[in-house]
Length: 347
Image (cartoon, rainbow, N blue to C red; front, side):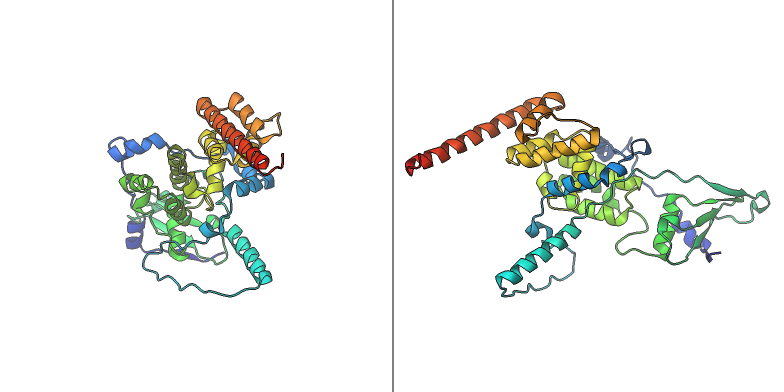
């Protein structure tokens, strides 16, 4: 039987206090944030089988675009001092090897956070002992502190003053796991930045990468708070057209999957058309096709986009204008190239 640790009652009173959060019905800031309601991945439509599909992962990787300069940029790390850059002279062969190593490292840094369904609440009563009722005035928590056990599988039980012994709820499990096996950077209680006016301020300043990095550190992927924070952030990015701020980060793939899963890719597709990334637009539609079992008749990138606009798009007018503008630019480019060839006597 694994060792069990009895936590002192005074310490538990502090840990088990109900966290005070803003009331969405009375808080004006929360009312503004309700424009971006939380969208969870639920068990009825579990996204994980689709997300972990090799072809889907390949498409998400291609759509992320690996920009070595952006992936390896220096981030704000508070008071930490920046290291001095190191300059080296290399042969072409050494440069090639260094570049390949940098790409490999970048792929590791761009590993997309897993997309899974939200976890179910824990409501498992192990025993009821009326004889223990009133013996203690405070709730007691017992934690299995055996090393090598996953936090999600660790046995943590609660004895209530009524005598009921039950499995601890997720909030208590998280706090106990963090108390005994702390993860660097994770707090016992979620920071204020994920709630109310603090969250809204970060969104308005478009601190998307900072929000998502911190959410990955603080929460597990199946945590309702993680899915609330990420889904609202993705919706804000989509509405404000902030795709470039997350491109070439580990969060862009999760953003694209979220939009494709919820059939809301029109803004991203328009962004790709306007920046002439037609091939990526086609790959976005391939992702859409795999998630929703949709078949496009055309294999040509631009024709596939036009087929999507005609049959599935919600913002047809804007996308049609975008495609027409791209065709005009393409035509002008071809005419210019033809003129240059004529001027050089090649025609």
